[in-house]
Every structure is written in structure tokens, then in C-alpha cells.
Length: 508
Image: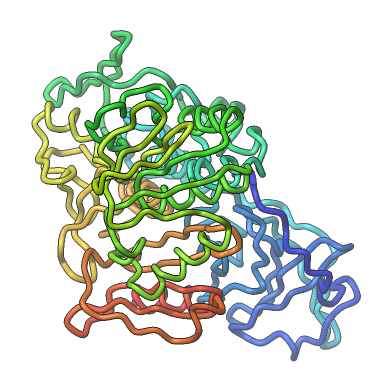
């Protein structure tokens, strides 16, 4: 993935590993920051052997020395990507690309790192794999499934069908840096065109699947072309909700899901002075932050009295609101929109908010129509088991559309987050190759609001208690969300290691 954040402006690169460091200073479980000719390198002792890999995460260039070492892996402090310290392989999303590996020499009680090692190639699958895999949906989950299947050596035909006209891209940036004008378009694709050709992934964009025939094992596309399959993976994602209100069908009322949606909002912002955002969801608030960065006057309209309180609790919700208000955002809370007429959004109390255009961020619905028409079991998502299998043999569902058993509570859940979707796709690829059992990953997401980032691990559809540790106003806090005394989720501000440790504890 191309990065959209600069490496940290930390001038302390640590010791020069070409000059050597005492072996006794490299402690098991503790990551050592250093460099080779100015390039950040990470050094670690793994089961009494020394390992060195690139020092910056391949996702958004976070310094991995600030992360968490778990066994023979390192977890990124910013967005929880995972890498193998032995091979450099990217084991867990959101990172896709592996780290470079460096040769380590131990001599006379000193450890030296001077040159790169040969990269480790993909493992070759030798078992009986599917001859034809078709993935419907080329978003986070679909792409991650295809990429991991090829990385782990699947040799059969692999087709990736996407209705989006663009190849798979970094969707989170559609509401973050790209929307704010801080990331160029060439940074958005997850992989370039050569990757799909070299990986023998038959990527078809702009041609949505129209019919799935589970008996004939075929997928018919919008243009009439038919793709036969031995294994089908549904990764159809979710669609943004557009309320059926007067004027909300106008061209200057936008939703945000795709890169095309994002660019339409950018174009509208270039001709506008004032925008109304309907909905104080994560998407709505991130859009607000991005459009403030573009110099617009931003108004947020939402029925709740505290933004995000249902997800993060009252204290953290109020703090996020104050962060936005400090940037000039005006909130109209406890109000629902009644329509958008003559450049004004009408509110329930009879007042209105003038706006040159509107962005709606009131949630999404899982795209289950194909699955339902094919006869699959649908209940607020496509129902799957712990390995993302539907009741139909060789048919799987992953990502925003999948409703699977939570390994912690046993409840069926559906998670609408980028990293979660990628990890589900990676997992189902390993299931198909006989490398994995039931899914045990903890949901994780991050949300950025100017210089404030919230990290969230776990899943709490509802909670009855919050515990705050630290100072939320100072941007240094942990918020624990509980129900019946059980810890369900942890949100953090400025405490990256605590967020990683919470994720690790959930896994245990």
C-alpha cells in the first residue's frame, strides 16, 4: 500500500548498527531502534537469535520500535499491522507489503547489521486447492482475500470482480488525507496494475456481478459474461444510506463510500463556502475535519446530543466534539434534517442551516441482495460460521457483509471497519489453503480528527459502563467499555502501546 503519512520527524535514529551494539543490550521482548546508513532498522532478539528488519511500517511508515513485540512478531503502534521478525512478512492488515530483512552478524560480544538479506518469497501451497476461485467485491475484504491467496501460493484461476470503476484503493483516506487534500491520487491504489498481472489475478472493475447460480456454480456479470467457480467468496460490502428526504436526491447532496464519491465532494468543495454534514458518525466527523482543512465553514446536524457517545461513551464523545468546535465546526445536535430546499437544510425545530452542498453520513447497509437472491441465509448480513462459510458448501462471505460468531461473546456480529474486513479476507484465504481454523481476531479501527486519533479494539454494540483512565482533555487516556462487568472494548487517545496490549489481551 502507498503511504499517506510522512515518517515521523524523529531525528534520533538510534545507534549505527554498522558499528555494532553490545549483544547484552538486546533483550528478548524489547525492540531496539537503530539505522544503517541513515535508514531506520529494527533489531530484536528472538528466541536467543538476533533478527533485523526495516524500521518503518509498510502501511503508513510508523516507527516499529514504538510498537509491541509478541513472540517472533512486531505489531505496529499506529494501526496494529503485524510482521514476522524472522522473514519480514506482513502477517496482518492493514499492512500488505513485507519488511526488508537485514543480515545480522554476531562477533566478539557485538551485533552488527550492514547489508540486506535476500527477500523471502511466497510459500508454495502443495495441497489440493480450488481450481477456480471467484471473489465478488474488490474492496478491503475481497482484495485481501485475493492477495493472500496468491501470496500463499494458490495456483488455480483467481477472479476478482468489482463494481467500482477503480482498482482496489485505500478507502479510509477517502474520508481522511485524500479528502483533505493532503494526499495525491497516485497514493490511493493498494497495488499497481502490474501486481495483478504478475500475480495472475483476473481483476474486472466497473462490472458488478448480477446473478449468482449456486447450482451451476457461476457468477454472471452486468455485461453478460459468466465466471464459473469451484469456490465463491462474497465480499460485497455495504452501501451508504441516503435518507428519503425532500431534496436529498439533488446532485449537490453527497454520500461517501467510493473514490468517485470522494472526488465529487472535493469538486463541490472547490466551488463552495459552506457545507452541512448530516450525521455525526465517524464518517461524518472525518468529512467535517477534512473540509475544515479545505477552508470551508462546516455545520454538523445529528439527532444525538453527544457525538459518538453510543460507540465511545459520553466523555470521549464530548471530547471529540470539542476538538471539532475548536476548529470552528458548528454542531446542531438533538436535531434531525427534514430536507434540503433552496440551499437550506431544514431542521425539526423549524430552523434551517444554509449550505452550498450537503454530505450525508448516517450509516450503511450490508449489500446482501445477490446473496439473498441466490438463496443464502441472510439475517442483517450474510450468516456464516467461524470460518466465514455459509451453509452452502464452498461459498464464503467476508467483510462488512458477513455476520459471524464473535469468539469472545458467542453473539453474531457484523463489523464495518477497514482493518477488520482485510483481516477477514486474509483469514478466509488461509482457510481455503488449509492453514486456519475459526477466526479469533479482535476488531480494530482508528478514526482521525485533525491531530486527534482514536484507536479502538474490541466490539461493543451496547455497553452499560465506561471506565476512564488518564486525561481525555489532554489526549492521554484509556476508555474501557463494559457490559455486566465484562470488558467489551477499549478506546485510547495517545496510548498506542496500551491499545496494542488491549488487543493482545482480547486475543488471549
